[in-house]
Length: 382
Image (cartoon, rainbow, N blue to C red):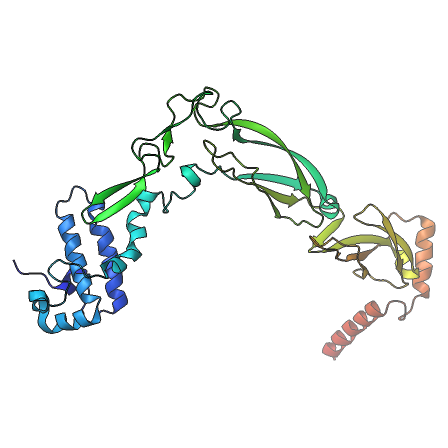
């Protein structure tokens, strides 16, 4: 039976680049690997055929010889790698597809992924959501939290075995946690199916934890919240997560902070903003107002005569602390001039007298605006 064309086997054209050859080989090798097609008796032959084609075409010199002489280039010992054989660099040509081919047998990664020494699984990380006030974010806080988690079983000290006994070595893998199996010309290493990578098994499990080596328990922890934290800040407490199975490493606890909106203050990074209403007379004549701060103190702010709505006053260094530093932001006071309401008869009379005495200099913006309006319409009318 005549051999198939190597380019046809890989499904590429004769002008295919080195990268195109490699990509085609990787894709087809995974598709036709015998381990993935245990019921297909022809899978191994197809796989060998792919290897032979790629071994010949990936080498520029062998490819040039094949393009000129075809399969005859490798007959009679020429090419040192044809007729189903594999050159000395075949291992390197296959190394970049091993992880794709065998990752599923190794728990996604060589060595078992999340398993620590001896195949013991690391405990899961825990997320805890905590809400604090803006004042607590300003000053910092010592908080007590209660977290439901798993801890090492006190009865068996986390081993999972009944007190007075100990786990036995797994006879399948001889305590290695891994086994090897030959598949054609490959040797595959995978987690032991008997002990699932632990290297041991428990004949007489602990009755308190049913052999898991850990039990569910609510723990009370002290958490230090530093000053200056922002909404979304994450605090990691190493080793305070779930206990690992049968003495495995403990996971971590992550506390995610959310800061409640404040009734008076709005935060923007390290700066704090506060809107303060002031009386019309204070805005017109000037005066002083007491403004609250986040540390529960007050500061006097001088309002100059003629202050308008929207005017901002900066109080340096009275904003939020910058996390893990001695720097503080600023406080910004924005005033809003309040229009008098529910006036008495005498108050109305006084305002009417004031209006009669008013002239352009007392309200330049409004006077100028209406003057421009009159000029605009009078000009159109003309």
